[in-house]
Length: 119
Length: 119
DNA sequence: TGTCAAGATAGACGCATGTCGATGTCTTGT
DNA sequence: ACAAGACATCGACATGCGTCTATCTTGACA
Image (cartoon, helix red, strand yellow):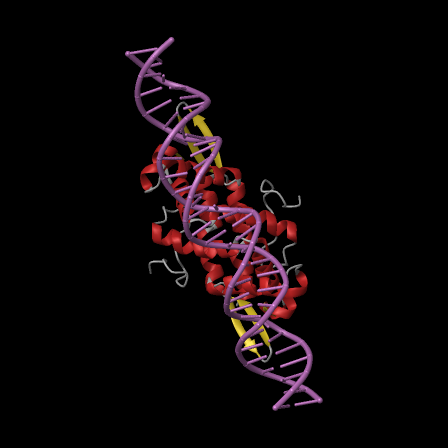
């Protein structure tokens, strides 16, 4: 309801519709903070464009010049902010984007509303 | 072209279309870092939904329980990341959202592409 | 049961960031 | 010329964050 926590999506009206209140802004900033890192952005894009819409850590590691714990840390941030689902299958852990979270971000930056007001 | 700097918009394909390269991710993260703060999110939403699509600092200050230098700092971050245009008229400084920057963010979180892949 | 590989956690370190009070810079009006 | 108001800049401080190495946990398999 209040959009305060990082767990309630479908959060707010588009940015240009009306001013966000403090709770809405706090909730939205949690998701955006998670996305506002080059490594995590690439992680999201790799997972999203990977076959089946999911990828295990072993698929992700080779794409970066970073240690395994660092990637694990970034995946944890994305998971805890609600952007990625985690699914352990055997020894491997698969990550998949959560559509609700992605939709929440997209709705705030709704193209029509933005261009309408900002032209 | 390369989307590396914070000044080149119309940056990248939607997140779900193909993996971002390092330069694209770096450029996009500059904009997202600027947005990933509750105060700056509210500043953007106030400016965007204000009459005429612009607001002066004097319009913005009363909405926050923060010092004037702090608000000035946040506006500078939004301006330098390309999200806000600054226009000094007399004693007042007016801020206005830059459509190109907003469009760049919106395009990355394109709803159709995201739901299509992430369902 | 012991070993190995996948991934997570813990702790440390340095740099970035949000906030403030004090001060600087313009512009307007007297 | 001076004073006042709007906003920016500066320097300081505490906190947050990205990265690493070392270590732990878990599951597969001989």
